[in-house]
Image 1 (cartoon, one colour):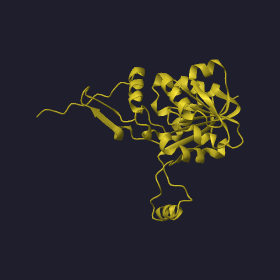
Image 2 (tube, rainbow, N blue to C red):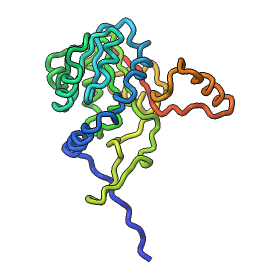
Image 3 (spheres, rainbow, N blue to C red):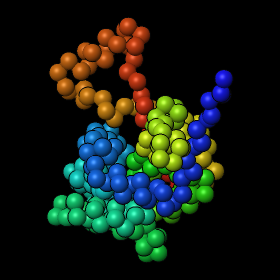
Length: 242
């Protein structure tokens, strides 16, 4: 009897990742911030209150910007992809408070700083060789006293979202996730790179708002039955160490 052969994991290069996201851009309704942007902005509002400028770091196609602008802030965006920057600018053109999207290298060269830097569901996509640069840039983009907000899947089982490509005989994560984060691992990674975590917590951005009829009653019933709502999203609030 022939033993089944394990399927090799795809080795993501920058070129492969760029190709994947160019294809994925055809389906904007599947983007995380397209689906949950309003709920994300609502949950993060306490840490943004009173801040003048905010940067969406790793903005993708720019779906979060209108929701941040609705909070009354000056909103900028950045990404490493020229296609993403162009899409974010086109999508948000004319929105009051939107100050434009630019490439990350241009933003760093200009030494721009912001009262808040938000990175939504980006850090799980980073290979080892990019993690340091990502967090170093985040720290450099923070104004003195600024707050950094990072979200990522919470203790994700990466294998559960793997799919198989019959053309190349490799498996890969459906959303190109490369790493799974917990509260302690994310806290340690940020601390090692000059960012002090003030709070880290799990939540569910897809959860219906409390004001939805019956929403509070249903969640209370689940708690009483010992079936608390799942919390698949991790939120980390940090500041730069002076």
